[in-house]
Image 1 (cartoon, rainbow, N blue to C red):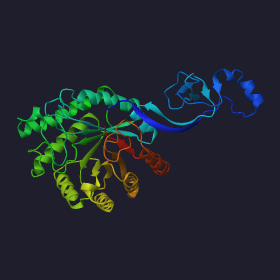
Image 2 (image 1 turned 60 degrees about the horizontal axis):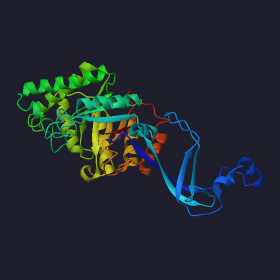
Image 3 (image 1 turned 60 degrees about the vertical axis):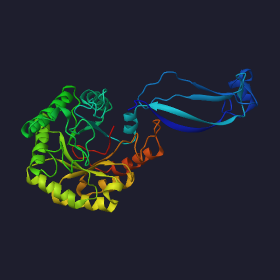
Image 4 (image 1 turned 135 degrees about the vertical axis):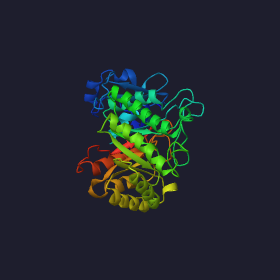
Length: 380
């Protein structure tokens, strides 16, 4: 992930001189040497960018007056030049998102992503070390953290829940123990550096289970035991941390009910229901809404659409208008480099980011935040 991002600001330049008064007398008084560096007309050869302050405080509030002019080949300012130009202001992606209303960052973590078939061969990005580093950035920015355990060396989703290479030969009992101790290890490391997550996912899009084959959905009892091992680890480290069960079933109500009925019957406990919603896989917005309303009534749990990309305003409206303020929040997936993202491939913020200013203004002022208070999240 890049650490610096550009926000494009488009200006139309009308270069006039320094004085804002059109009176010739005042102009000469304010700019007695204008004739030394300005000409009435000419052919632009370059833009000159100068600032009346060369050092700024990076607090989002400090201001500087900029002076931008078009000059000819001799370096003389051209008074009648009219040229378009673009300014790119560099900034940290997390701070940019925070300024647009995001208050959580969602990070994924893999067991050994540095493995040859892992998510990040050799470099190990999204492993423990880089997660600790990213967590420090998140907390330094004053944001909350949602940690998404994939329990794999690479992507885990409904089509694949590959067991970590280091866990391949374990018996089921040892596998359950390892999942528990690994979860505790990660959380203890985060707690030691004072970056404990406020929320944890026990698996990612787990409607077909985790760590196959032992935790496949066809093995309901074993799946439940593995999920309980993960939840137990969270409770042992920090009882205030919320636990989420995340299914990729935004609009599939029957399958959602099957999953939660079976896991709850087997003693799996949790705080938040997480759903993915992508129209190409999860049906219509009406289906998403109907599913959320039904499972809310059945299970009395807060709901978070913890992955989505399209229908940004609509998804947020549905979540935040759920009865009894049960809409825990939303999490736009990969806003830096996926489908209907809010940054382009060069890190430039797109106009879609402004949707979140509107969502924040509409729902935050009169909404009493729950204990965790998730508004918007982002997955890096």
